[in-house]
Structures are given as C-alpha cells and as structure tokens.
Image (cartoon, rainbow, N blue to C red):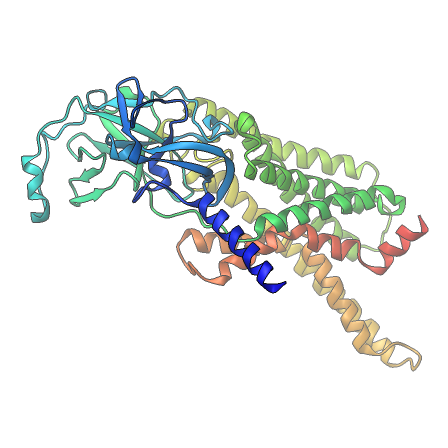
Length: 487
C-alpha cells in the first residue's frame, strides 16, 4: 500500500513539475509575451515583421501575478521576446489594466527610438568601465518591443533631461550623473504624453519589491465573515440597537466595505471600475475612523456622566457629521485628480487615484494631507478619550474594590481586576485606539526602519484579523450570548 502511495505521489510531483516548467532557457517570465495568435512557418513564429525562432518559445500553464505568485490558466504559447528584439518597459496605470493582465491605454506594442528621440550621440563617459560605449553606433531606427508592468508601492519617479541619460540598444538606461546602468527590468517608463519625452524622460525606478505577508488574504476573508456576522447579530437583537449599537453597526459597515473592496481588488475583479473603487475605499476607510472617534467621544460621556438618557436625534447628528466629513476630502481628491490627471510633474501633490493603484498613492504630500495626518488626528483623539475613560473607570473600580474588601460575601478582588482588564481591552478595540499602533508601524516602515523584521508583520496580521477580534469581544461574551439566546 505504501509503495502505491509513493508511486502516486511521484507521478503527481512530476506532473506538477511539468506544468510549472518553463521551456525557455534563461528567460524570465516578465520577458515573455503570449504568441498564441502568431502564425507558424517551419520553425518560426511570424507576426507582421516580427519573427521568433521556435527555440525561444515554450508552453505555459500559468501566469505570474504582481505579488510573484502563479495563477494556473489554460495552456498557451509564450516567447522570450527580449532575446529577439530589445525591450523597453512602460508602466500601465492600474485603471487601464484588464482582467487578463493586459493594458488598454492605447499604447502601441512596439515603438521606435525615433519616437522617443533616444540616441547615443550625447553619451558622457564618467567611468572607465564603460568607455567601450563611445564606439557604439547610433540606433535611431531600432524598434523596441513594449512590455507593460504595474506600478509598485515604493517606486521612485524620476524626470531626466535629454542630456542626463542615454538609452542603450538592449533597452537599458545609462544615468550620466552616476554612471549607473539600469537594466530594462529595473525601471519602466511613465505612461505620460510622449510629446514631452524629448524634453523630459519620466521613468519609474524599481527601488524595492512589494512586501506581501503570507496568509493575510485568508485571514481577511475570515475577518470579513466575522464582521458580517457581528453586524447581523446587532441588527437581530433589538436591545443591542441602542445609540452605541447603531454607531457600532455604522462603523463595522464601513470596515466591511473597506475589507470587501480590498478582497475583490486582490482577486482582480474590480479593474473595470478601478477609479470608482479608489474613491469608495477612501470614503469608507475615512468614515470608519470618524465613527471610531464618535464612539470614543460617546463612551467617554457615557462613563463619566450621571445622566444615562440618550440625547434625542443624537445618531442623526453623528451620522451627518461622519458622512459629511468623509465626503469633503473625497470630493477634493476627485477634483484634484481630474485637474492634475496623470501629470508626473504633480506627483507630490496629486492623489494619482487609479495610477499607482486603484486607491490614492501612498507616498508624497497628498498621502500625508489626505490620509496619514487626518487618521493620526482621529486616532490620537480616540486614544485621549480612552485614557481619560480608563482613568475614570479605574478610580470607580478602586472604590468598589475597597468597599468589596469590607464585605465578606463579595467576590475576591482578583475577579474584579480581571473584569476591569477585560473591559479595558474591549474599550481599547471599540474606541479605535488599536489603529494608532497600525499607523505608527506603517510610518516606521515608510522611513525604512525595522525592515525585514517580524515587528512589521504583527500589525499586518492584526489589521487583517480585526473583524475576528471584534467578533470575539462583542459577540462571544456572556451578556451578548444571553441576549441572543433570549431573542
């Protein structure tokens, strides 16, 4: 029996290896294109004036996604096009990416160096190791194959004048200031109007790769389900639909929409409405932080006030404040994005919605103005409310504990302490203090501290699993379960 299992396992491993094997030697997937519609003559694949030898082709059963993972697709033929003709990479705005990974911004699949006005006339040799470039001929009419790529979160956008770079025959770029040569897989050109290229060449320098923490997608799916279950319970139990419950439902709804948009976008299901997704995600994300601040303010009043009567129309006032406040910056971002468009010269102030990603860019002044600073203000406010509330509760509990020690029939003081700590934990999460830790660690990563350490992964897991935490502290507690069973 064990021998049979070993044979089956061996066959499966070989089958998987065959499926994942690339038949093109020494060729990266990023240097290949799909040639399934090319015509074959003898041992050559032909499309217009492009001829590709059969030994530079191979059958693929997968495609490589942005995060480096493989997605299994139907068998198709790909060719290592960069070994046939020089390649140049031009980034594709996220809003122009089709579900199949292609780009529909209308850029032609091959361009001429004449169009880009890229020659070798003005080469400046600053390093003795590249003196042989002086002898290179001029290639004005050489055609380049255009390969499309996505933007990466930490890409650096650089503008170079015509006398500050030289485009080499293989598609790499020589930077005159540093004598550095960037290969064609270390950069991509910015997809801007080509009439500006003779003056300034905008290109994206690949500074680093996107950091993906394993398991976050699965945790996010579970978290999303827990958020929906939490909202359902609060809607189902009438006694939970008080003022605090309504505010919690609104806050959790915004988080649910935020998580849902992220999940669908991760599955490449929202490319057709990428820009709308960007504005919607920002609106719901900002609204969730505002609701956390409102909940913090209300809980502070609830615990410190002797009047337990809920103010009339308070929820309507809170709703008007949250939705209106979240709509204002969203509208400003929309107007700025319409005015600036994809102009790289406005990269530090433009939101660039739908360009780097569907959401606003996470670098530059716009990210601080519209995202980091407002969230830091809101989370700091929530933290202050939490601290003040916790001090008040601690004082009250200390008095209760002192009284309880005088009563022989009372519970041990340790029980009272445990209940207090659990209450602090619930308030810490509900009042949104948790998010200030996430923002602090995010800024630490932006300034390149603690890179490659587990400390940066912990907030990512906590963020993706926030719905699970909410479900545990709000639903899986005695009072809520008792109300649910009575209902």
